[in-house]
Amino acid sequence: MAASDRLSALLGRRLSKDENLDRFIPKRSAMDLDFAHYMLTERTFNMNCTHILAFKNKPPTPVELIPHQFYSSVHQLKPSKPLWHIPQTSEKTLDAPDIIDDYCLNLMDWGSNNVLALALENAVHLWDASNGSASELVTVVDEDGPVTRHQQEVCGLKWSASGQQLASGGNGNLLYIWDRSMASMHSCSQWLHKLEDHSAAVRALAWCPFQRNLLASGGGESDRCIKFWDTHTGACLDSVDTGSQVCALPWNKNECELLSSHGSMQNQLTLWKYPSPVRIAKLTGHTSRVLFMDQSPDGRTVVTAAGDETLRFWNAFGTPEVKKDVPKAEQLGPFSHIRQIR
Image (tube, rainbow, N blue to C red; front, side):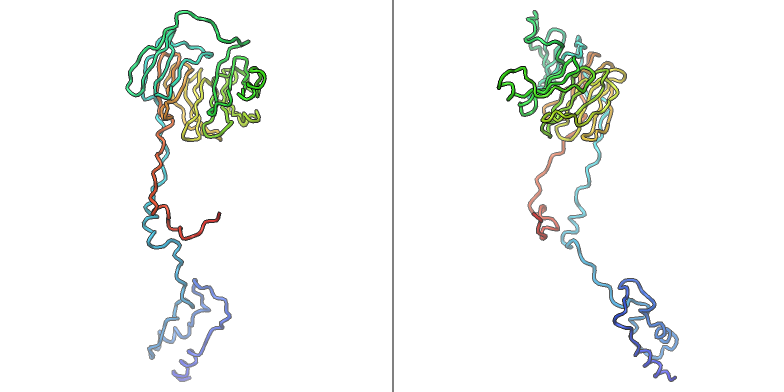
């Protein structure tokens, strides 16, 4: 066959339009190998060689998911917040001479005016956290006796944030939930729930700041548990064995975390994640059981007092992240043109 006839025959070949070809991966069936061999060996004609060792069809142009004008701003977004490093030791330590090491007493409170009140022996002292000044508020000379009488000591009292419910724990291993509406109806002695799951005195009480009707309670030496309660129904939602006497409980005001203070072996503070509950960190420093614990008004600093006659200040909850106002132009984002599903 003449060279011109052979070339005409090769150029006349066509693949079937119905053939199912992969548009991205080259296939032998999509290539004219005879024509390629002819062009590589004869080199007699200047032909269009676009189909030699090439795709049958040109790949489609990639779809631009993010408009180009937004590409740089997307890649400059703030990186994820690193994990907060929790200091394992206290930031400040103050002397607390003659503090009474009694599980049934609550001798410390940090007020909303940033002043810490602490009872030492027979006097109440004030410490101003803003400037570090100390003063004596009152000295108790004579004991007038209790305002009301109980069959056993009341170890803990805590109002809910709404002021509607009061939790009380005592040496009888009982936890009571009181409701103001029930107290105003008939008798102030009628409780809403009587909770008997603890097997030791109930001293540590803390109402959750971000979930209504959620109460955490801690038991004494033979119980060692933190229990979480739904005070609307009286149900125990969860219980965790801490391994030692639970003395105090504050919630983190900015995160789903709970801090517990303990006695016996290590006299430690333990930070828990809720609702797991998973142990996040253990803080040590006291040499006696940590009976008293409270928070600063902003929730950043925790103060503890123990039988070792010291006050210690901890940055256990970290610094809350301040939310910045985002300009309207940034709020639109790269997908602002897409209508939201309502």
